Image (cartoon, rainbow, N blue to C red; front, side):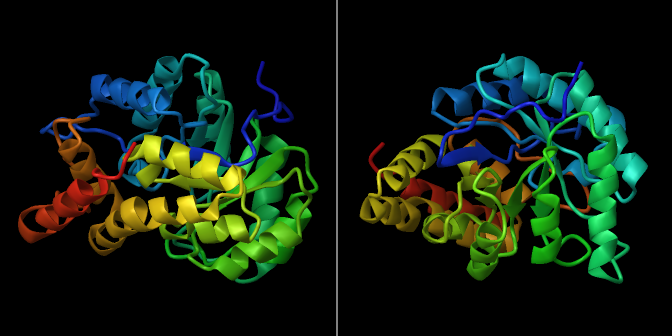
Length: 306
């Protein structure tokens, strides 16, 4: 039976890839390719896996597909690293249903953004939303602060209050605001894990006290991100900055322009990890100059010594 108070084993500076959901040319989920992605990233040192997040195009998947993607991820991981499954939805029952599905197929925790479309008209709205999710959750939960796609930012005061609950283990911050990382760290217990989700800020966020990152590019350059995390853990910020500048930042810039799900898939195809870079509407597969920009950035980044 799942227990929302179960400990999640992660190192002091962790790298968790936000996984793409690979599709065949006809847009069906390619579970074989997903299993290969999981094995490829684990073999290169990642500390956990995050399926069905923003990069995983969760909003373009049916409920049955989301459960199947998480199940494939769990099975391919084989207990080697924890799986933190995306559980975004617009209602408390919807979130709890996705968490229940994730728990049923063996996920270790859930990543929960605020509701999207309907914005909270007061910070109390997000606070009450998360309290109800935590009350009914079968898994430990991580908050997901992604103001650009949800109902605005999660208030620091809300995070501080929720962080006292044993079901709430941490937060992914994709605001792109380093001062937000600093405030989240300052206002939560040391046991509450704060992960940056804005790849270009990996090193800077660690300087602000983050515990690593949940990033799309950790799924494209897992070995480099492993080296980066080890360098940060050892206090070798110069080495970490070199990896940030030579590997993550150039690819982040083009993915920021053209979209992370589409960009990450082109990058993975360029690295011979997947065969198709198919995405589902409303996203479009990158072609022409957009694809060339991603490919060029990946080629240059891949020359970094492993």
